[in-house]
Image 1 (cartoon, rainbow, N blue to C red):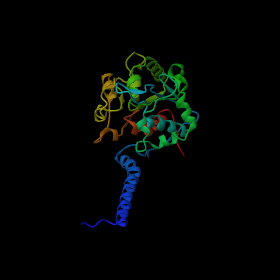
Image 2 (tube, helix red, strand yellow):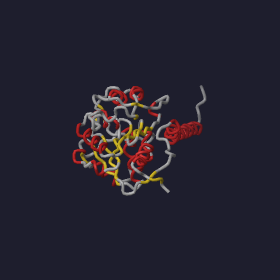
Image 3 (spheres, rainbow, N blue to C red):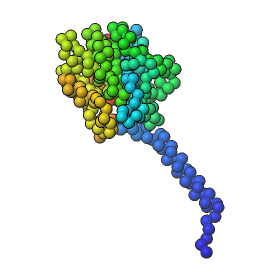
Length: 287
C-alpha cells in the first residue's frame, strides 16, 4: 500500500501554492502597468511646460456611448480628456468641458482599467469638480467659441461616430480658426476638424501637417467597423498626415504643430499636445 502524504506536507504545498499565486498577482498588479509604460503607454512628459494665467481652454468630446454594431460601451478615451485638462489647469487657465450633445460624457470603460489608466485619470477620479463638469458638459451649440484661447478635441472610439459629421462642430471650429484661436486634439479628435473651413471655403486641414490615430492602429486593435478612421479621412481631405510607429501603434507617440494647429497621434500624446497648444497661444515658460 503506497504511503500517504502527511497532513503537514500537504499543508506545506498549499502554503507554497498560495505564496506563488500571491507573488504572481502582485507582479501583475505592479508589473503590467510598468511594463506597458516602458513599452510606450502614457510616457512621462519631460519637455518644457508653459503657463497662461487668465487664459481659457475648451475641451470638446464625443457624446456617442456605444461601439456600434457590437453594443459595447465606449466614449471618450479617459486620458485624452484628463491629460490636457490638467495641463491647461496647471498652466493657470480656466478649463471648460463640452460635448456634441451636452450632458454626461460617456467614457471608454477600458481606459480606466488599472493597467491602462494614466496618472491624469487617477487624478480625475479624486476630483469632484472635474467629475461634475463631465457629468453635465455643455452642449457645443451653446458655446461662444470666441471666448477661448485654445480648443482641444479629445478622441476615443465614440468620436468616430459623431465628431466628423457634426455640422455644428464644423462651424464652431471654423469660427475658432478664423478668430486666430489655437485648435487641435489627439487620436480620433482631429476628426472634428473635417468640416472646418478656411475663409476661402477650402477645408481647414487641406495642405496642413497634422497627426491622428493611424489606420494601422485601428487594424491592430481590430476595430475597423467604425464609420470614420482618422488617417483615412484626413488624408482624403488633403491633410499632410504624419505619424510614428511601433510594433503596436497603440504604443507609438507623435505630436505635430503647424502654426496654431496642434495634434497628437493617440492617447500617449495628450500632455505634449496640450503644452504645445499653450505655447502657440502665447504661453510663457513656467518658472
